[in-house]
Image: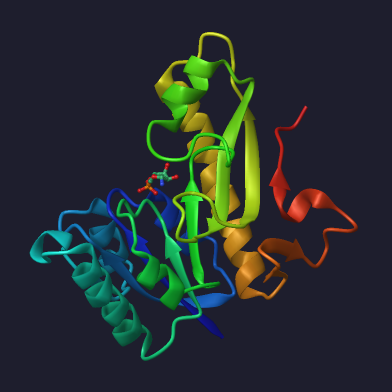
Length: 214
Ligand code: GRF
């Protein structure tokens, strides 16, 4: 069975969605860069190994990333098949990304390549886009830019507040991330020439795309 580690920084609702989805793989640990991350207690109560690698205790990004990589491998007893970033709010160095190339996955609350970085819902409302959503993607050295695994689309409704739009996207995040993780763990999709190919892409786009009903 494939193994995975989840990295969080905060409440961990995407982590919970992954763990509730009964994925075809074993979560070997949840690791946070913040000792106070609420998701850590949830994971520990669920009986999962948890660990903290506190970024404030490291003088440089490189030394933090080296410690984080070591902790991931220690928890996995060697090589973790996948590392799922679930609200992990640190920019990772090129060296870390290279070490976990093809195994490092993130969820971002926009339809990439639109709106990389922070404040995606505010930007969606400000620019007047009619569709918004989330993207599960492989992590590369360029922020929020790697090969796309799954995207979920939501409408932007007239009068939406940031909170309403964020909640609509988050609901889809909780479906899109497990969908992508399941595909990866089951070997139903793979990276080829910088793009993700799904085995069933030719028959249906549904493996990689969630669209609103109606
Ligand atoms: C999510 O919106 C995720 O897309 C973004 O940060 C948020 C984390 O939320 N990267 P949670 O910690 O998973 O609840």
